[in-house]
Length: 407
Image 1 (spheres, rainbow, N blue to C red):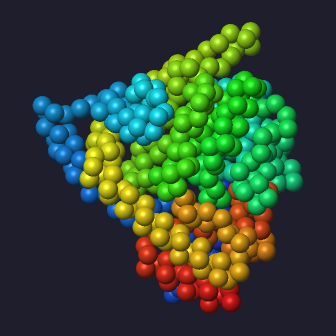
Image 2 (cartoon, rainbow, N blue to C red):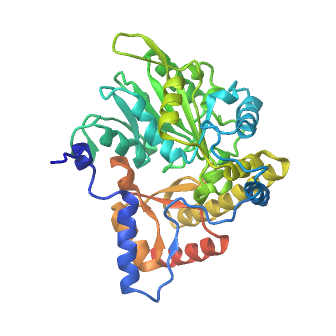
């Protein structure tokens, strides 16, 4: 008899986006003539930047010639990409990160989900609420929680993220070991200022905790006062791991490229209190379970850091931010309270109704897909998340439909 990992049985029966797809499919089956506009899942719609395409094509051509063909690459990523990441994403902003502290991967979702493998099942894990579901579900799968009860898993520490605290979680009232933070935030669109981020760094240092900092949406920050990396805060290299992605930055959702930064100063401890390098542990994990990102994809990612690439990705991000501005303005004119959309691609909307009820209302009356806030946690009840990832033409059409349906 083969026994299963029964932690999987604790998972809610349906992943948020699976439930959305099920409802949308049912609507399409009964309304085949209706055109649906998706402002739900955070998938980009614009093509890759031209600089990335050209680099991609050159690299594919190299792979067609025996003399320039490449097989297995460095599992941490090619130095031509890691050098650019270290210099432009960190060192230029005063964050001292070296290329060998960077691990190139096929997605921030994968890395934020896999990183928990390095740590004891006995840790106290803190997650914001609302939260990106991957942080929670991977800890459930690992066995760090008890059963689901009243909208939460027993065993996790939930950090309420609400209108009252500007959607930035307050420090926990108890000692925790592992802390998930995401800024700009998915789903609320919130950002964190230097003072509050420093408070989190100080808390982690004082409590010997580790921060897992998801900065996948950093390219959307337009306010220069907002930190773009946790490593801009003094002392963060001792207590933080940062995750970045090319998915939203440069449209790599279908191309797959990201990276994780683990400073060599970052330590964790065994049961006897002996220090161990988290960098070395992740290095060992990656050499065992990961064979790296393909050479053409890494060349395409490298092109993001060229002068041409930087100009093109800024134009791309501006395009989506303009969509966000239009969407937020429309909902505010209808009397809804909104957050995000200025330094993030998501607008978090207080509906005054049950989240799924509002989802169904928009789907049935406006043929618009949104994301119910309750799918992100108990504090998301009564909210929806709207994504700016669509064409400007579709967004304008969606806004007109929404105004008609909600007036």
